[in-house]
Length: 313
Image 1 (cartoon, rainbow, N blue to C red):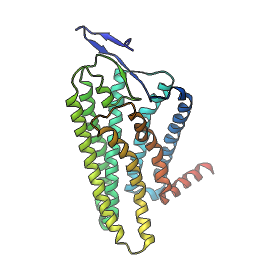
Image 2 (cartoon, rainbow, N blue to C red; image 1 turned 30 degrees about the horizontal axis):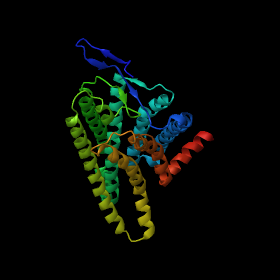
Image 3 (cartoon, rainbow, N blue to C red; image 1 turned 180 degrees about the vertical axis):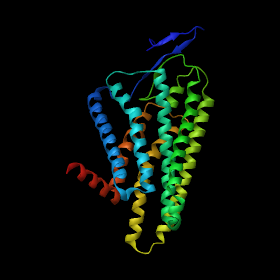
Image 4 (tube, helix red, strand yellow; image 1 turned 30 degrees about the vertical axis):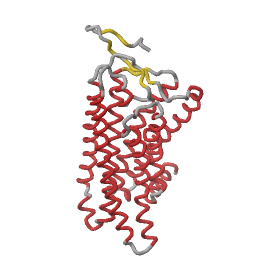
């Protein structure tokens, strides 16, 4: 365990690499889990790539809603690529991760995850404008505004992640070097610091909590107004059709937010059992998003059929 820990010039211990313990209690299931997670990764890449191609290749889908959806699909591909390949290598007994790679993994994970959080919020606002302010939709959600909102999500996500990465890795780490998790994340790494981490944990809880709460309030407010507008529609068919355009987004939000809130907003988070919960928003949500959006959206299904028909014939 401590073979990767060396002495520096000041005779204090410096960690050069970490050991990822992986998913607990899965020692006898490695071959089965490698197969399952590898297939999940392939289907995640294929599903989200097809969704991006369908939107880009279908003129009817060149709308702000689907522009944000392609951003979400790209984020899902990247988010899976940050965690899943390392998890597969962990099952093959390649459990070590260099210090610098751990820093990069933590940064990109929180960068992409926070971008998704902001993007879900922007998508809720887009649905609010489309349903509650239809006459002003083209003005309020012009391409210039859509691109600005998407860039804002990426920029804010990067700054948010950079803050947590600096706060985490400016602390001294002198051993042990085993992370009780399947990827480098804030709380499991803070457990290994050679100093008091109360301030770091408080800042992490407050920061992530404030961001999640603000995004949730905006999403909730948007859908309260959306539901009020839907209830004013006279015909049942029109009411159901309008609500179906929001159901996919609500499903995706629940799949992403609930596990995140459970892991990061508990005072004593970071237990090994959190690995099973983290699988939902790191692996399952990116896999299910293209399925959820394509199955519940008629325009996306038509676009996918046209793309597949064009490639096959």
